[in-house]
Amino acid sequence: LVTDWLHYLATHGDKFDKANLHWSGRKLQKSISSDLWSEIEKDLDEDFSGPRVFAAIVHHHQQLSTTAVRDLVNQLQKLTLSKETAEDVNKFSHKLTELCRRIEGTGHAPPDLACLVASTFIHASDEGLRLEI
Image (cartoon, rainbow, N blue to C red):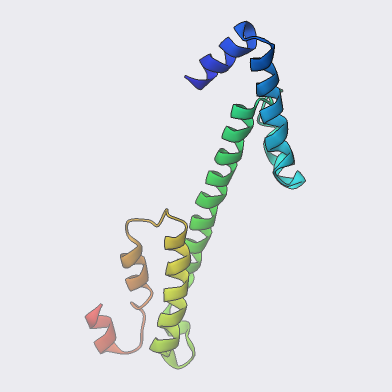
């Protein structure tokens, strides 16, 4: 839908439509860091119109968010109570809570997050704790 609209404006739009497409793209380009621009510029295929630049920025941030969730979940999966000094449940729970807050803060927490957290307690030396899980 947007692609068709952009094509129509580029081919049939008046000079103001074309100027707005160019101007909005330049404005967005100048509103982001040069590092971010370097990342998204290669995906634009020489179409630097505002809607294309905006879509590339959003797409880039979505990719970063997905990667961040994956990294945080990997960190969570590497945690285990048995590796915690003296298997300090309070200290370990605090680490888990902070990591889960970061995961949930992305807005893309995996649906099995509770199971992932529970699995970090499976190898505890306290049999009663293992049975509770």
